[in-house]
Image (cartoon, rainbow, N blue to C red):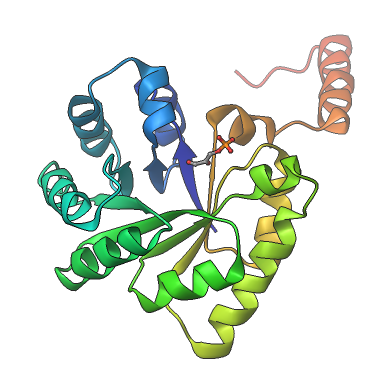
Length: 217
Ligand code: G3P
């Protein structure tokens, strides 16, 4: 499973990237706003730092402007994936940009039928939003499983990018189902390491190291 980091915070990306945990980055207008940075500037910095795909989202809602914005975004770096919303105009932009050979991430996916349309329009990534479905008492994981099943039935190559991940269990379940990629905030990725038995076991070892004065160096 590939790990993308869902943030536009350079320091947080760099920290995880140094550990080999970053296969790509996803941003959206809310994350750009939160960073307080200019979209082009911060996206370039992220692309310089990370080798894998970096999703940058268009701001327009009509296909022609989305395509023009996409063409500007891909000039930033070779690893840009243009992010477009799951609307008919977004799908038109997806088709045009993917026909031009660019990576496209179709975002705001909330149904398997939407994911089917995105795959047929040539999407590189489809981003089903798990947490936002959970927020309205639906099961986001059912959507990931449905898309996995449908894409496998027909051999679609569009990668399932599990998004709107809010917890470590979302990561685990996405991995179990076989999502190709997950994108999560740095805090979620970092908390995947937590286990009370690891802490307890290490405490016990440290006590014995001190008691027996065990030294290696
Ligand atoms: O990048 C899109 C996505 O991951 C949003 O997550 O938590 O705002 O629903 P969230």
